[in-house]
Image (cartoon, rainbow, N blue to C red):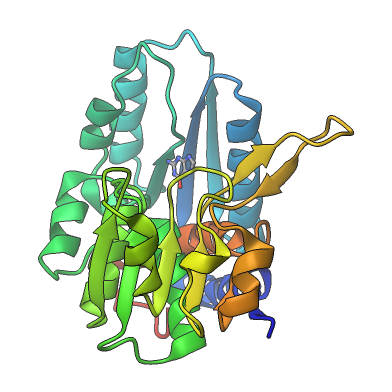
Length: 295
Ligand code: GUN
């Protein structure tokens, strides 16, 4: 049997189209479009590509993009001042400071300075705490995208065994909280977990977010499981160009799973779609409007 390939690109497109419709309605009610500020410090090529995709998606959704590209010698004080300026700018509903930041800047201080109501990454402790306690929060985009794919694939997640491999603040921890919110039975596994293959084998839902190429093998997957692969790892190839692979050995896992996300074209596009969604939600809350429906 070969698993169904979960089409993250199509799911992301559908969300972005729905966001665009709501953007028009927001603009009519609020008298201005939602705005997203992106901040890129330095010239890391992968980060630059990522930020460009975000600013393009923002414009395509009919929102305003404020792109700030700073040199890699920017000081922490300069970046903190920019964040304060963006906090005070009424046209800005979302602030995204692209990570990682250069070594001279303490990312935790920068995140703590972002107005939580504009924290469309959901990284601020206020939003992390609100998610953990079940209050309305801005939720990190990647796990939110994974949850959307899982609901679309499986419907009700109540009672399912979910194993999240990885415990980062950006993916693993919020992913586990979202699954718990949907009444799954949740295990967070990580690099110190004993007999990781045996833990993963219990799972109806596997979310892999470890950042190690093809670490999770086909014989770790329970028959009929749903696998969501957050990893994006470049591995060398003979032609020198390299190839992107996930944290899951796709071909092996697809032999046993019921459904699995590919890399690329799975979770990746969902992250940007959810950033658009979060910016729209932040704009509504800041304008005192009810949440857009169905997003
Ligand atoms: N770097 C890689 N992914 C992300 C993301 O989702 N948000 C931010 N701020 N930086 C990133």
